[in-house]
Length: 381
Image: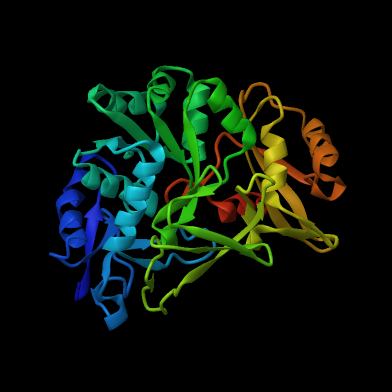
């Protein structure tokens, strides 16, 4: 049992491997609970320090992405982390060597380190200091792919999109991985289709810090994980659940997420989007994920993010930011709006549309919807 939480600065480059030994001690109950924080940044007030009685089983404290407000510290036990890592390896076909391509200050990245510890093989590391670059991915992947056994990595959709668009050494390396876990944000079907056509073995994941990372793979819960829908809201249970939130209360047997879902005819879970993201325009409810899905299926569109922008007449209007495949040949805005009208209804068609070279990101690579909305408050929005 841990008595306190100790902050551990984690860089974006190879120095991240300094986290391995302290994390091993925390998992084995030989050291304090760890709070990975970005190197050079201050520790959030109250994040480190003594643990309360019910918190003492924690081995790791990870910050949520903050996509729906201020980041919160999630307390994860060694048992939850091990259960998640073990179930992942069982689903993928056995332990292997991992390439860490995400920040280890968030659950998706730190779980790559945990899985590597359980597999007994040090992970390869992609230096993210200058940002994500497909060419650097290829270089970092080379020693991982040359090692014996199975090979895995974990990405967010933006990284996958950039690797597919590059069609160079980065994509060639990606094809050689036995599985590429894809999470952190909704994966548009068009992106998954391009990945499949390119020969990339993508496994979509759904989960969050409170479930020790992804706990539903390709719509199917990992062994031991239970899923139910209550008023369309996704609720999760199982050995991967966190103890609770730092300074808050224990989670209990079930965790009620902020996500909306539906059960497909074959029994798989489909995540529709976040309940907080739903746009209400003129009394009509518009799920942003549905509009984004239509937009990225259109020719010339690489990525898209849809948000609601306050409007005196409509309450909110649908606003879309689109990343074009070719900045010199932008898709026709009216053609994009018409595609959404046909597929999702008139209310879903973006009243505001803006092209940008790339989407603003936060945390482990999630789209920063607050920053996207702010683009429409600028004079050129």
